[in-house]
Structures are given as structure tokens and as C-alpha cells.
Amino acid sequence: MVRPFGRVSVSSLGALAEAKRSELTLVLRVTVAAGLAFAADKLMGFSQGTWAVITAIIIMQASLGGSVKAAMDRMAGTLVGAIWGAAISLVVPHHGNIETGIAVIAAVAPTALCAALSPSFRVAPITALIVLVPSGGHALSPLAYAFDRVGEIVLGIIAGIGVALFVLPARAQNLMVVSAARVAELNADLLATLVAALVEGQGRPDVASIHARIRATLKQMDAAVDEAARERKTHLSDHADPEPVARTLYRVRHDLVIIGRASASALPPSVMPALEEALIRLRDAAIAMLRGIAAGLRAGTPPPDIRDFDASLAGYVTAMDELRAAGVTRSLESEEVGRIYALRFGFEQLGLDLKDLSERCRELVERGRPASL
Image 1 (cartoon, helix red, strand yellow):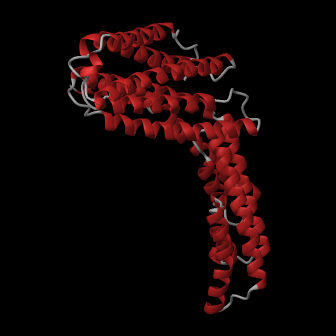
Image 2 (spheres, helix red, strand yellow):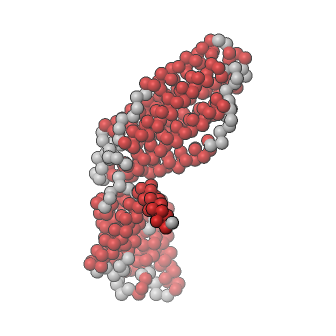
Image 3 (cartoon, helix red, strand yellow):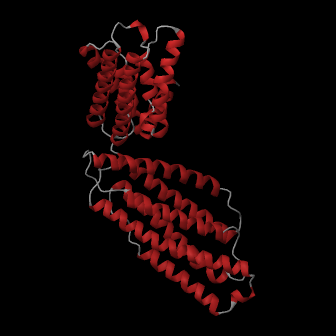
């Protein structure tokens, strides 16, 4: 009985490790960076011995671009805080409690203002306070202690960026592509739910949760786009700009919001026979297009041909025109007529934006991007 349990456990652990590959990779990079920073710190003989390690851990992010941003922020905050803390320590006496309190206020207030104006300086007040009142009773002068702290921070940054570059490096482009593909898939799920509500009239219980997942994934995608831009600016990457893909995915989501507003309830029974078949064909073609785009992004292959979707959209528009020509809409309330034509507008806009998204994804693939994810 023990052996089957063991096999199942190993299999489950393997599946979990594969599913959490990016997280485990980050764990490895953080651990290696901390070890390298500690060893280098001891070789250099700095007084504190921990700030290099702390810095290496802090700047290690999921992507190289994120690590560069964290390193720049850490360096900027440390320099401002160390310089100002050393200056206050030299200028303002702080031997008694009252004098020390005044010196602390003088050191923290300006650096806190810097942190309030720019998040890049958020460690400046902490650094200023540490330089002003060093822990452990160090005999170093304030200026020497400031130089010592900056040196440790630089050492930690070098260790962190070095590990981010050479130990299982993760490019922001990969993270962006994963998020973009997930957004496309979630949009397909959302469209399926919305059209089901139009045709079957059984409500939309899953819409709110799908929208929440789309918002969360879009947020991840935006962060990855910013990090990818930083990698290109610092010449750490020569991949194509992923921002056009992200921008177009936002437009697709807005189109689905329009369709969602028009699908609050089922279509009127009088128009259902004329529109149901064309609407289902259009739904299937749009879902296939979105899922094909997601698969292409992950595999680094061109998106699927959009002609099937165009044909289904043309069929739906024709069905709408025939409905109007037959005078069916004349017997409907104005609110229902407006909803039907809002639905048509939403699908027409979706067609334009899916075509644009397909072209942007094709450009991303043709200009090259990281291999398989």
C-alpha cells in the first residue's frame, strides 16, 4: 500500500513543480543571489555583512526588467538617504535624546518627501536613519559608514543583476506573452457566457468572476509590458515591442463590455429564429479566433486565419439586414431595438479589433520573441 502512495506523491509533486516552474525558478535565483552576495560581502570585508544580501533578495524579481527597475530604485534611494543621513550626522549634534530626536526629524523629513514624490526613493528615509544612528555601536564615522553602506548595496545589486542575467534568466517578454494569451482565453470564455445568455436566457452567473480574472491578468500584462520596455531601453533585450498587442487586447475587452450590456437578457422570441443560427456561428468563429491567438502567442506561431470569422460576421450582418427588411423590429419596444443594434455594433467593433490583434500578434512573431514557454 505504501508504494502506490509513493508513486502518486512523486507524480503529484512533478506536476506541481511543472505548474509552478516560474515560481520555483525565482526561488532558485533568489537563493543563488543571496549566497553570492554574502560570499562577496565577506571577501570585501564590509562592516555590516547583511545589506548586500538583503539588497540581492529585494531586487530579484520575476523578470530581468523587473530586477533592473528594483535595482535602480534601490540605488537611488540608498544614495539619497546615505548622503543626507551622513550630512545631518555631521552637522546636527545628536548626543542626548532631545538632540537625537531633532536629528532624526531632520534626516527623515526631507527623505520622506522624496519618497512621497517618487516611489524610487522609498528606502531613502530608512537609509538616512540607519546612517544617522548606526546599529551595533560601530566606530566608523558617519561618512565612512555611509560609504560602507552604499558599497554593500552596490555589491548586492551586482550579485542580483548578475544572477538575473545568467541563472535561468526570465525575460519580461515571456511573462507578457503568457498573460496576453491568458487574457485572450478569458475573453473567449466571456464571449461564450454572453452569447449563451442571449440564446438560452439562463442568466450570466459567471460573468463577474470572469471579468475579475481578466482585470487581474491585464494588470499582470501591463507590468510585464513596462518591464519589457525597460529591458529594451537598457539594451538587455532586442525583442519586438509587445505594447501594441496589449493595447489591442484592451480594445477587445471593451468590445465585449458592449456586447455584455446588450446581452443582459435573451433575445426577443420574434427575432430569435432569424438571428440564432448566425449568432451561434459568429460566437464559435470568434471563440476559435481568440483561442487560436492564445495558442499562437504561446507557441510563437502566427495567429489563425481570420477569414472564417469575417464570413460569420458577414452572415450575422446579413441576417440583421433581412430582419429589418422584414419589418420584424417594428413590433418591438424601442429599448429592445436599441439592444439588438448595440449587439451588432459590438460584434462589428470586435471584428475590427480581432483583425488588428491578429496583425499585431503576427508582427510580434515575425520580429522574433523568446522560444517556447
